[in-house]
Length: 334
Image (cartoon, rainbow, N blue to C red; front, side, top):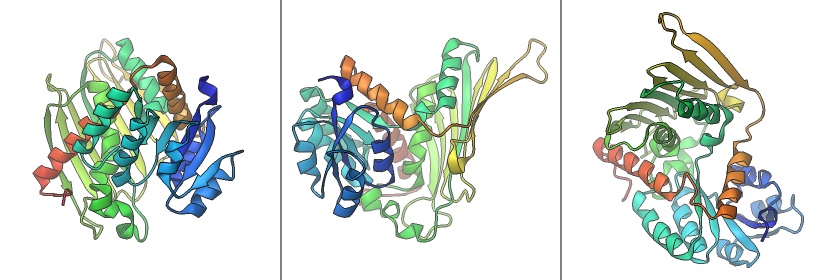
């Protein structure tokens, strides 16, 4: 079947499900599923011939569905992904893909058996500033990378402690699992695996059994370090990622929208050192990372190549989170 005609089912029709529906390009939305049937109907109503249901299994079993988007709370992500790959359906599962790394074991083994491809929705890799930063690093202009520093956070909202993210049985954890996995994934993308993991998760403000701040100190085998902080007590939404090489530094600020205009600054060290030469790229356009990411998934399917980031990347990020939760005395498995 031609990639532009692939049929899609979206499971979970909240904010992320709607973003996914808006970024399908020429793929065809076949079915929307949500436990709130009205929400599924509302989303399906925007797309010609799309059906709606409150039964997600019915949606993924439709023969015309070739790709399943899992955009639910965390507890259902690996359940939906597993059922889809059993049927040989390709899956784009939202981060963090599961509550615990072990929940992905069977998904990985089953996908390997059926040939289904699974991409994990670490869409930050597809922001233009980060794509450009990766190109610069890979070109060698930054020299050998030494360390990274990342900060990411928002301030919550009234009633935040009553939402599903505050319930560890549903979410699996707090901010370290929520926004933390994005920073971990980006750091692994630039530096590689982190065999040395230290950090702390803490609840400072919100009256909830999960963490609202996470602090990470991650090191590669070569002792390159990622120093990361994620927060639900940021008040003013912010994103900042700095990548330090021996010959240059890259700094990404903002993600668009409430996080501020996306911008990449390249600081090139001069032979005489002193103040660096500076180049700035600004990205005022709307966030297109969802579309770029999905186009990449369509290409994965066309070429039958394993998606990156995939389930192993999600599992690696989850293991780092679990290590820090254990170190901090958080038991979200109960």
